[in-house]
Length: 426
Image (cartoon, rainbow, N blue to C red; front, side):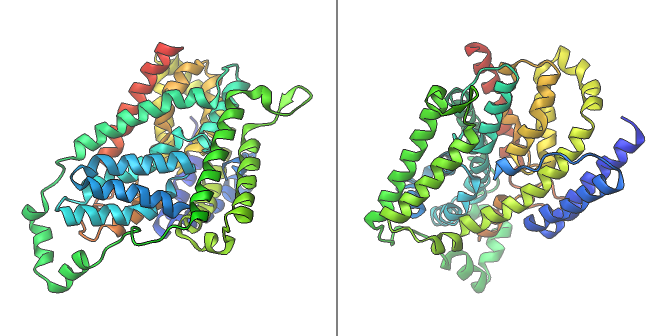
């Protein structure tokens, strides 16, 4: 690694650091400044922009009924709910609709909200590598097939889903008695001594159970689930896909086509209203993430693609003796890039070029989630804001936050289990 490469890496890190101080949307825009400096100032060839990485009330109501029926188990059930919502929808931003409910249930049960909230926020992002419509999974399959590892989306999910569930349950178990109970927490009790604070903490509440879910909304969920089934069917049986010159339609395009068609069917037959959809928190948060991820991923891809040969030389000896160590590389890159899909796109070709076998890379797939390490991702920040008790925090020293412990335990456990499953199966 020469001096110029180090300077340019500092520019990448500097752009991410400055952007994180202004928020998620600025994070993507300021990454564009770093990108411009690398391209126009240092003459680096621009990488590929991540253009491929681009009826809720009823589902949330079902989840809320489960959580309110078993409030004493919320530390385990909350992450399961956010995990499976992400698996179904393909984005972790669904957590915004459920997190206020999780906080409300924990408070009313006397459970320290940090316990379920911290691991539930982690779970909402872990589910991305387990979703058949998530960019990270589709990119892994596409790049792996191009490098001689014949894998399909269902086969990836056979490894990632059980592995990530093991990781989440380990993190939930570690969070079960985390921190002081509310009645023994002096900071929390001090807040309750102030009538205004007490009213703020216990006076609010969030629920979807008072909403009447129309039959059209339930019908829309069925359409969405049918679309998921169709996508998985095409992924499992590629011969069903149309092909040109012997090359079948790419799965990222299949997902986009099927989902756009599903949206059209919802509008026509389920009375879905596009104006209300784009005004909702999931859509708005998703659009912020698109801008942020676009800038971040393009900046990172430009840097890594221009130093691919140098990185190969640096990593070859290590991964030759310890192929699993590529998981550490994936994790560290993810700390810088707030997108699991972008990490796969940027780093998986490098991993294959180093001679690492496909089953090993499948086994370390959960390690592409590391952006909880620096708590600037929207879902983590939102979780802190939703917790009226103030127990879910970003610490004074930045890294001593409520998501560090469950995140590290979950990713570490998930990666080990996935690696073992991949070795056994392949």
